[in-house]
Length: 396
Image 1: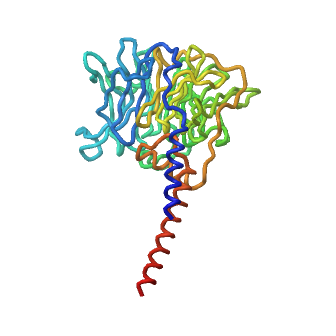
Image 2: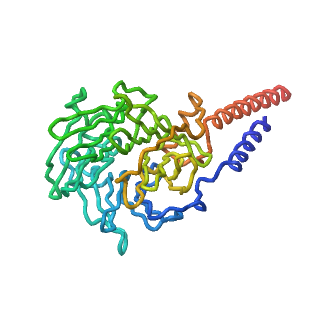
Image 3: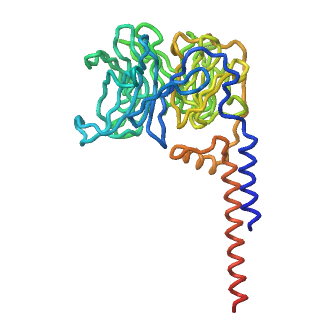
């Protein structure tokens, strides 16, 4: 029975020894900082700013979670967040959670210079995941709590709003359930916004005064998009998406009125993606990916070769390479299906994925490790039971 436990231990040691490095800055030819919004599950959320070698220049926490982050022209950082301990709670009991946006100034020490937020029932599935400044100076916000997209002036006045209930069948109170999980909105033209509706496996284009004018993945096919995050509009007929539950980054092109997969990457640097939640086409033509459960941000080129990566514990959500997400780099011309597919065991891979939301685990740990460990445990317990039974019989 001891051999089973020893064998499993050796499997873990060997897996760790042969695993590719999570960070690889030796190949870096990047310029500018990388800003990361860390959602976190094992520590508090934070904004982390990395230099070209993946080292942290500064970070700022004081929140349950951070999501979308972007560098502003004056060097400060706009970040969407959720935090506990507020006394101004509206219809909710105090203290409560509030979610919204912060502007963080890194000098002389990182500190908040502006905050706009509103109270929510819980920090789970109610956070503002995305926000950006419009040319008008208004903030464009994706509100996951009320399942809406709206603009707000700096004085807090809401100046325009699109409710998802105008297009989707709504429950009695969207704030009491994780209905659509609207997690991203990008301005892609004058009064024209790309919205990620995660739980519907859809992207929609919303225009002011018209509502939804286009739907990507109309039949909600999970092989096209599955609980996606952070789409980036590359051109009128091309969009890049972190296709999270399919563990890939995918570029969709519109051909003959249909959106089809034109390019996809399932991993980089010998490590398969695990729940990627952001993908940005950089001006240099590479793609920057936030590989959430692998706790890394990685840059790869069109052929899938990793050119830069950095470890970012724990559970990074989104990364922004200065000067920003837009203007986006060009769509890819070549077709590709890059990186190894992960083999998921029905029960064990699900248990492992669930555990990663609670505790930081080695990136190389896979579902089959749990399966082997379970067999070793059963073998050990069975052997122990036989040993105890045999000892009792000899004592009679």
